[in-house]
Every structure is written in structure tokens, then in C-alpha cells.
Amino acid sequence: MPHNFKEELIFTFLMAGLMVLGMTSYNVFLQNGFSDTLANEIILGFPLGFLVALICDLIVIGPIAKQLAFKFIIPKYMLKSSLQIGITISLLMILGMVTCMSLFGILISKQALSAYPSAWLMNVIVAIPLQLLLVGPLSRKVLALVQN
Image 1 (cartoon, rainbow, N blue to C red):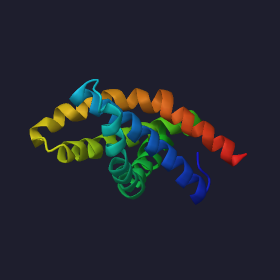
Image 2: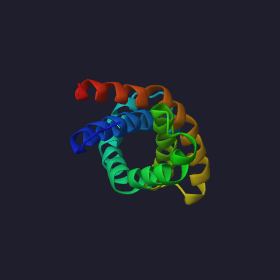
Image 3: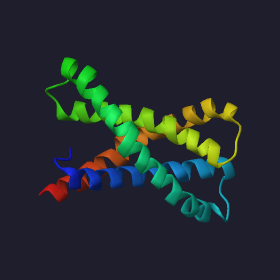
């Protein structure tokens, strides 16, 4: 886990960047399938998605998820295991970020708001394993290298 503001920024940029790249790729593929423009659409969609994800993560979702985790969940059940603390915070972050970013995706692609529940479900199904199995461990590994 990050110990100072610099480490928090590095960790957040890695985490948000990789998640936005993965989820943008997934959503562009869902909408268009394999096409000649797939890479271009991912590249074009990434910067705005990354900016929105950073704002949501740093200002809204991150503080709320950490506050919920440390106030209600972690003290009662998992204070002894840093892995469980990391997974708890990651799951809360995933739920919050999928909620925000699915709405962002619906709005940016000019879909009807009635598509939101389906988009949320499809995104959470991919975001959980992407975060817990790939992006989270990779980001923590890079953070550990920065800390040493």
C-alpha cells in the first residue's frame, strides 16, 4: 500500500490507467467487435476516460471506499491481513468505479440511460477479475519496486 502522496499518485495512475485501458478495450470490442478501427477507437477513448477515472478515483470513490473499508469492514473482520485489506478496498473501488464509469460510458456513447443496468453488469463482470488478477497485483508490484 502507498505510504505517502507520491506513492499514492504513482499507484493511482498505474491502477486507473491499466483499468481504463482494459475496460475501454473491452467496451469498444463489445460495441464494434473486431474491426480495422478497434485500436484507433481505444486510443481515442482512453485519454478522456483516464481523466474521468482519475477524478472519480482521487476525489470521490477512493476516499469513500477507504473510509467505508477502514470504518466498517476492516476493523471487525480483517485487521490482521494486509492482503484482505487490499482486496476489500479493491472490491469497494471496483463497485464505485464501475458505477461511475458505466454511466460515463453510456453518456459518452449517447446511449439511452435504460442501457445502464446492463452496462454496469457487463462491466463489473470483467472489472473484478481484471483488477484482482492482473491490474492490482501488477500495480502493487511496481509500487513495491518504487518503495525499495
